[in-house]
Length: 336
Image 1: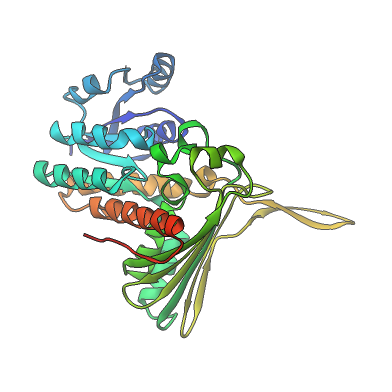
Image 2 (image 1 turned 60 degrees about the horizontal axis):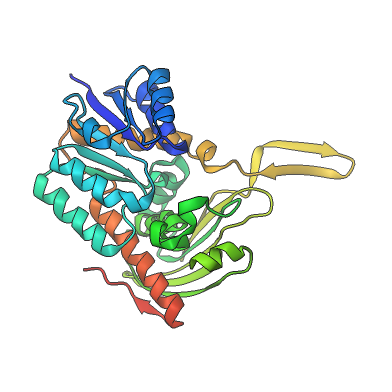
């Protein structure tokens, strides 16, 4: 069976991770090209991984060996780069979030359907063993009737450069919490239909200047009647915290920890655990599994497990959150 040829565009931290995984970990795929506007970076990664390298994305799309692209560039560039790829008949894996605005997301949906290609959004937590087992427990009825989804998401520090500007990244709701919106929909198999946001600037003045928030709490309703709560902040004192709980009438499931259980230091002062590992270590296996699923969807000509509509939904939820915060009241999520 011929391998699916993949080109990776955007060679920052995640782009390089994707490129290395495709090169060494995905059996039915072949890394054939990488691209970045920074020539030194494109060249160094290309030479290290022994593939063609480009500084011009359009030229990489013209490479006949490229069947699909992995897009790991800043969010505000996603829409145009996705559409260019699908118009060339290339399948697309795009890092989350899919786009900055709902209007952009709808353009992507239209283009993907018109050109009949696969598009998968990089919501990698769906491929993590803990979240997958939690979903299995819910579907098997071990929790009884799901009543509440509760999540805590706290990053180690403020987002860098462009990501701190909500006009380019979608801000805290989209740039940071889109994973949590997607997990809520995935685990409870229901849509988020109404949100109410309390938030503000408590830590970073520079985020306030750019129009973003650094701490938010989102209460929401699901289409199946369940309730939800997500608390997110841009700063956590000792690293990274990601915890999720689904509470049901007959049981509860917990996912995640705010400590690294694999290492502790014992002294006369007591037992000291350290902060949980940053997302690249925590979800490394999930990064592999999501790319395997993307490649298999192309080979088997089936819908990817995280669809273009899933990408649209998280952008719709994020826009509703911004509207709720600005208006100070609950807002219905427009799911058209």
